[in-house]
Amino acid sequence: MLHIFNVLRKTLVVEYYRLNVGFLFLIAMFAFGILRPEDHIALAAYIFANPLLLSLMFGLWALYHLKITYFVRQRLLWDSHEFLYFLRLLPPFQRMLAWLYVQWMLWLPVMMYAGFVGKYAWSFGQQKAVIATALYLFLMPFLGIWAYEHRLVRPNPDTRIKAWSQYLNRRFAKPYWSFFLLYLFKQNPVLLLLTKVFTCGVVVAVCKLYPTDTYDERLLSLGALTVGMGHSFMLLHLYEFEHLQLLTLRNFPFTLWQRFGQYSALFGLLLLPEVIFFVRYFPQGVHWMYGLGWLALTMALLWMVFGRFQQKHYLMDTLLRHGFYAFIAVFFAVMFKTPVLILAGTVLGLGVYWFWRFYYTAEYIVHEDALRLRPE
Amino acid sequence: MIQVRNLRKSYGGHTVLQVPQLDLGNGIYWFKGANGSGKTTFFRTLAGMLPFEGDIRLAEWDIRRDATHYRLHINYGEAEPDYPEFLTANDLIRFVGKAKRASDAQIAHLIETLGIEPFLYQTTGTYSSGMLKKTSLALAFLGDPKVIILDEPLITIDDATVQKVYELVRDLYARGVTFLLSSHQDFLFESLPITALYQVKNQTITVV
Image (tube, rainbow over all chains, first blue to last red; front, side, top):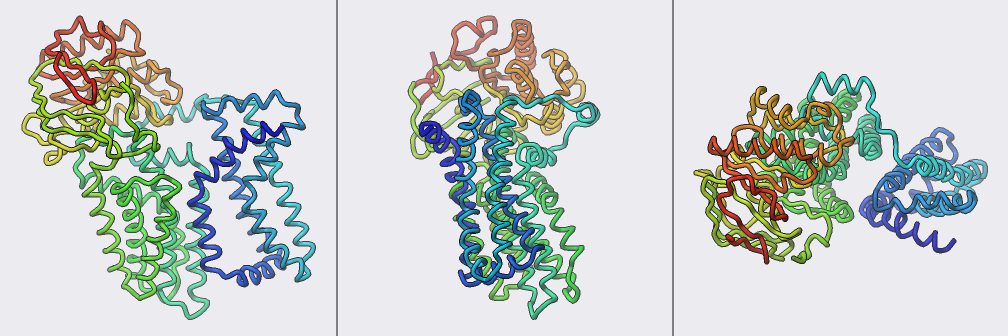
């Protein structure tokens, strides 16, 4: 059994953490950089005492669980991971143990955090809520096991095209702007869901928080900053998608202005949900000019991140560390009351400069191995 | 037609291809080389898809200064095409056709000639390697290019389509289009009027 654990650890667990080190780093920076440990304890006391907030917390953890489960299910579709289907030959109990091992190893960050805050909640007399949380944490991985078993017995998902999809394919040719959106919906729905839940949540939160205290517009600008930088993963996927599956785009006779327009339209579409929430919850007393500046800043941040990818190719695990530095730089610019339009103009100028200067020199490096000389 | 000067292509500081000088007039050129010799890198570089050091010109257009005109007149067909699996051949052909300013008549002709109609509206995720190759060939012929680069154009396609590709190449060559073809096999392009044969080896290109 140890050999099985060893293979699963190397192929799934280590790979997951290797690819998500940046994501976890950012979460840790947000969680423990902005909030002190005593704030977490106070927050825990508040959350464990309120069933609604506790269920919201469960919802957030469920999203993380979705992310890890999706990762493993996708890996099972890779040709290089086909050997994992031999797990079918193991007795059911051993197979369950193997999957449980994977799931708990991937679920570890949530369990550790829950253990930390749960310990204090218990001492504050919230035993029932803590027991409910422990049960939740224990039972959740079994959902993952079910998802893996489902994939294991159906190694090749049915790819029949639905009738309405066939009709649309015949009726319309998909426009360019829809390519990446389709990629997100069909090949990375979890990334799309997690990003949009997070960024739309931030927009609603800052808009609702704004009138409750003596906040000024900087709070909204920090929301824009979080929304813009929160799209970094998605933009890295855009960069990779176009380099790996649509490299031919670079052979097209589009001017840089045309390409700028195409990407701007795409970014506008990507930000549509946040814009809708922003307009819907736009706080009273904020000037509409500031609203325009907010939109410009959000869009400019997407351009800055995307432009930076043209200048320097990032692997997933280094992206968020660098993104964090950019976040801090803009954070200080906001806190020092830089007018939002000037900030948006500067950030956009930087992104567009990088795009203009490096678009045709950008190159996708899949792996360090690609840098080695190949034998004749 | 194509002028290459001091071309150097490297990955992470390692030179993979160095071409001090290469001049190609109108013709059909065959580039031979083993797998991994650098043919695809050279072709992608010529097509404006990869960064490099040096200068490349197509007729009066410089690859950097006249980026749009240059790319309008040079097409590239991938050796091992890989497209987003949710797009159909129709989506790709319409998209590339618009970018390369192809007429509806030309699109219809290529679809018919290369036998794409049966799977035109299926998503590429369901394609065999031959169907993917036919799609990539159709994309490479779209528009009114002066140069068409076909990387291993005959692999994975059936004999009937091979003959069609020969016909397309001969027809366009007669109308002044230059072709750069590659293969690692010796016999594939014997029925075409090859202007010159080049060997891609030891990180450079030499005429044979």
